[in-house]
Image (cartoon, rainbow, N blue to C red; front, side):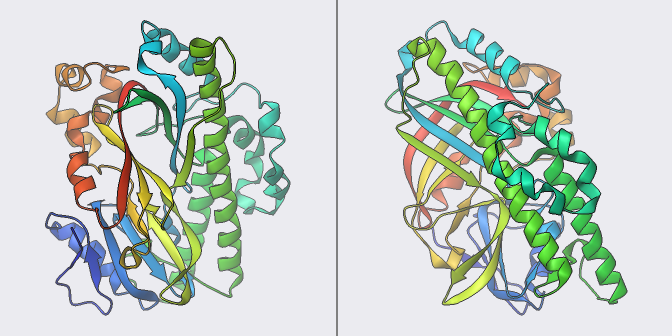
Length: 393
């Protein structure tokens, strides 16, 4: 379905791919962003759009000569990685429990970190840039080293999935860990201070921004790119360990070539060319979907996930949704659902089934099929996956 322009009295229009009416708080958030003077052409809302901080999660904001750090968010470079393996479903027979316990023993989750950084991590070229990051994170290098190759918490996950041909896929969702969060907070703080000093009347303090050409903009852009690279490499490190476990159980340790490999951000900003002009594009809960770009749109841990290929739709700034999007907050989910609901909704999936993950219950998310149907002009589906194992952060 193509987009609908929202009926808002803003200088720049808001184009929405969602099939639902926005609530009053969501409408206000869309309006706030679209009324900023540096917004380029229009704001695009993806089908999984929902409330965020400052800007809606599921929004694509193109800007001229300015960037909003809180719109990028605190999990800089958060995104997905997936590989298609040469293995088939029947090879997993009776091995899922063991595989899950090995993943949990090899990849730290939640607030945990690696006891020591391995060689792959210490050899990462970008560590030499660390001393040029914001002074507020300079004591965190050892922690950042040990957290590289760890999952984090919330809705981050590691999954073994099967496609419709019974081929095994490995998939994970993670970002830039504590270091990305801390860098974001340092710069958001600076942007808010600058807005106060300049007596800017912003529709929301979380929309404080940096102007291109200033030292503050340059410092944020530098740190942002570093954190995005950290997040991407973090997913690579975990995927390598994850694949080794699978190769060990399904091929006696012989490393097998991935048939397809995808690694994409869905919380980030880049400089891109749109409608003949170079602009800054912030994707807050959205994936780049230029022609031939592969993307990953995961459902909840009891639903399907999709590997997609972009169609290069310019009206969406070549973007698509990043998931199903939450239907209710974590607190609401914990109130509404029971442990029995969780057990029944994750039937057939080797995963945790305790109160600690109740807020991640499939029923707390929008139906993923609906979200996919809403963006047939943005992407084509190349594989439909269903998880058989899920490790939660």
